[in-house]
Length: 405
Image 1 (spheres, helix red, strand yellow):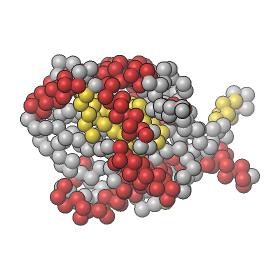
Image 2 (tube, one colour):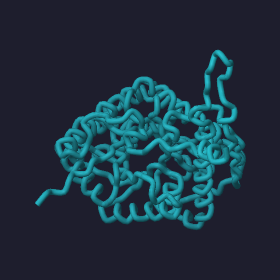
Image 3 (cartoon, helix red, strand yellow):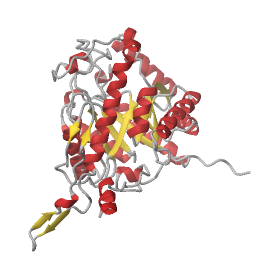
């Protein structure tokens, strides 16, 4: 009787400041004085690339970090402040060769035309390794930075009463991504002629208006940036329930979800796949990654003790939207394979203390997964889409132009 083959996993790491635990900046390995330098972030991404990870994501927002999901908290004992992650990724891209770079972009209040050319530029700078994590904003204080529309003051107790408001924001995000995708396609792949003899640099007939009209956006196009090397950079988003699952199903290449166990993972994957079918995308490859916060030590007791010590420094037990794992790389490998069997195609790990837990991922977890035949031993593609097994999509406007010629 043959044994069941071990699934090949995809792995990513979510980078946020000094780590996902709010007291992580107080650890000796944290380097808080270097947080706003390019070298700090370049070192983290280099470590992730040494571990052969598919990609890294960079957290971002339109307001200061807060322990309150809906408003600033005024705290001064936790990391506050961020660099612009699209610019940061573009700075790091030339220092790396294989790993994908996925900055977070808030699509509420911002303009899709601007983001489309920024991510297209990142794809050029990285030679085809760009992605984006689209994120909505529900905070009233963040709306105040722009002054274009009034937002209600939300809180956890009354969130259910604002279901229509939240749904509208996610529908807006879906339109936003549609504009991104159309703009990335608005130049055909061979639109640039660059013929010195004839003096023709571009074939204007291969640049297309996108003519998008929606409740929030009216975008003519075309882009001012040629079609990105990947054709379509990888679009990702975090989802916790039905409405965000629908965004993943409609517009995503990859969704991050937060299951608590294998049964939960199985149910979530089923919901995402249903949303994908409802969007008419049943035949497309759509990745569903599980998010976990990780405290990793060779001795599981040491990992649990470190979490307790950091909780003591923070003054309260750390909680997260994602499952929190404290244990050894061997135990984490067991868990990832169990969750993978429930339908997840990969994982995005959130290091509790990036200076400690990122190397534990790359030098502890990755070798353990390799030993089990569950993770690559070398990079096998030159683009992020290639690493994820996503084909380079055809240009929608080129197909239309050919059909009407």
